[in-house]
Amino acid sequence: MNNYLTPSPLGHDKLIQSAFSIMNQLIKYCSFLLFAFWGISCASNYHFIKPQLLELTNSSEKLDNGKVKVGARYHVLKEAGNGRYAKQEERYGVSLIAIKIENNSTDTLYFPGNLSVISPITALYMLEMEEAYEAIRQDIVERSEGQERTFGEFLLHLPRSVTNLILQTKANKRFREELDEYYLLHCYIEPGVSMIGLLGVDVKKDTPLKFVLDK
Image 1 (tube, rainbow, N blue to C red):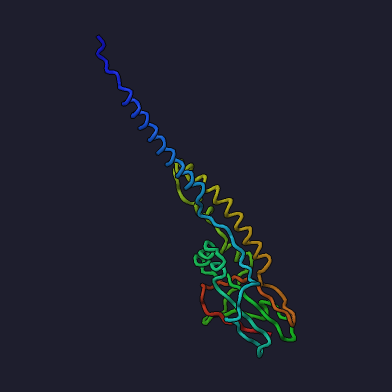
Image 2 (image 1 turned 135 degrees about the vertical axis):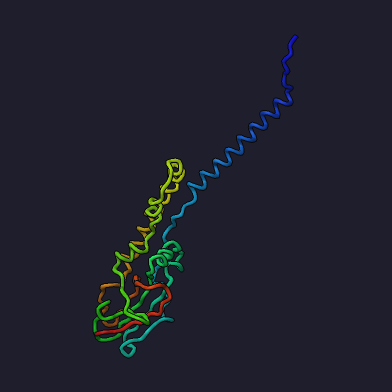
């Protein structure tokens, strides 16, 4: 006599359905993890500021009896959609401003030799282009490399780190290209010429600026 119990076909079907349900949940969970670590990145793209299209007349300051006009504008990185770069400004206490110099005098001006930028307290240091780039560029990958992780955490973060590195490198390249084209330091401005560009200043955003002409 056979004393073993034989499962009914109905119970067997329920067992298979339960197994398939668990597998589907695992697949969805794994897919979510892949999306989270491959699709989402802390690095962001760089959007060109295009300083030649900005309106600066509201902050315009007239020098030399109105023959020389200077205008400046803060928050150009944030307004262009470069939030990561704007945070770097705050982190290092520097500002990338748009600046326009209009020379209607009879003399050729050299910037910064003939034109200084001061705050209500003291003269401000104008960053060289390379200094501005190094201070404001994205450095998410470099900062994350300094964090201590286990081997498992390293493998888990590896896809996101690779994605960040690719996006960061591409974005910083675009940022450097715009600085190369528009950085307005060490330039001559001939009579009747207007120049507009970008300038890094060692000052926090929204600090009142004053321009002083020294011929």
